[in-house]
Length: 304
Length: 248
Image (cartoon, rainbow over all chains, first blue to last red; front, side):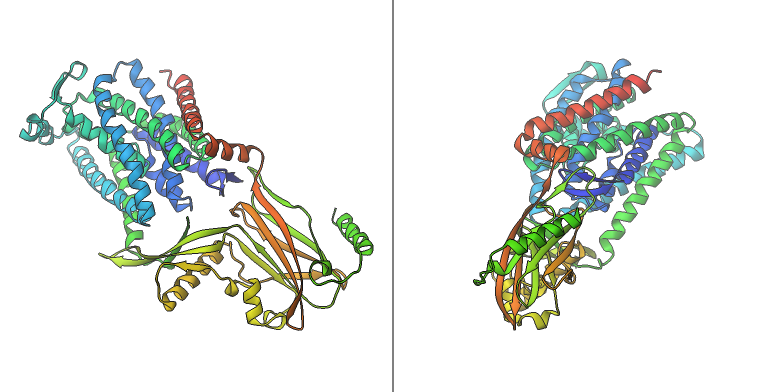
């Protein structure tokens, strides 16, 4: 069934969008990731303008992150103070990100920069996760990055000013560290349409030294507020949030997540991470290939 | 429906005064629908034009969407990767262009006349902005037309005009699903011995209606509220998920 998207002003096959939403929901239930890294490239691949893909995806992330936040909140696993400091950074990051997106689009480079950023991010995260999950699968135990956890005691991080106490996380660190992590998160939401959980979570564990149990809930809380803010900003400044598209993605996501959660109980942590890493790398290779393969049509048009 | 329209036309022809001044009296044009309505289930449409010509001659019908500024970009290789390296801006580019003819292009009217009336894709004249050489403009212009044709927004070849009698004709234009919205003009020209003797202008509106249109208007007229509504919808969905599925 074809459905007309009122903001994108084009027709898309509803089945494909629902399927995409369901598949991504399945992954998010399985791995606890938002899945934006799959949705955004696929929407662009289907011929949607990158702006609409990113703007609408941020709306979808609001739904995906809220259900996660609520679950963690009930267990008391959200550090609101730390999340709040991260938010200061991420809101700043998304304001800059939205302007940067506009500038790159004006320069005609957005279709080049988005895949390039994806290749770097997915490639590096995928490789790290791939190596980590493989070694823990072989050793039959979870390897908690012993060397990298020392990162937070590094002179650079301890010497930063504006030290703050975060009682919930039992941390005493410079507010600049969580602020900077949040800033990167805000950029990712507004430029790439991803929550960035797969980047934020390791950063909060290894750079911030946060207790692992609080990381998921706190990062989701931060992502939720950021995506709420980004959605409203994209709607106001760029008119790139398509409600019909978002509703389909969210619906598919809800269905898919249930299967994902059920399936995840049968899957060991290291195997799940291995699968996720493989998936990140596949998407990465596909995007990298497209950057290097000569296009059949060198010219493209854009209505101003 | 079709028969009714046909009948109405035949009656109209009979009643119309037969004073053949230049222009418009030689031609009568009617649309089966003077709006193309885009609803949520819209998957392209068909635009049917009926007409009557009261003299001998060849016909050309041109459908044009609202004019836009268009940037054409060219990809090149840098560091092995393909990205846009050059661009050119054009103005007066019709967002949509389709045409129909009753005969072979060259025979209907000389090139200079086709160019004047914008009949055929090659005769469209849009202006390049900025300083460029003739050769560059030609390359980018061709690329622009090629792109538009690839997306189905410029005609590849003329539609056929079907004559139901010597005077009464009908044309069907296929409208794609992602047709640009706005105010369209349909120009009909009558040519005799390579010169234009009659012309007729008809308006057509292509726009979203119903739910689709409401969403579009909401997003553009009240974008802050629209953004908040989008967020609330997402929050509600997230909350529902939590309520029903995460009981454990």
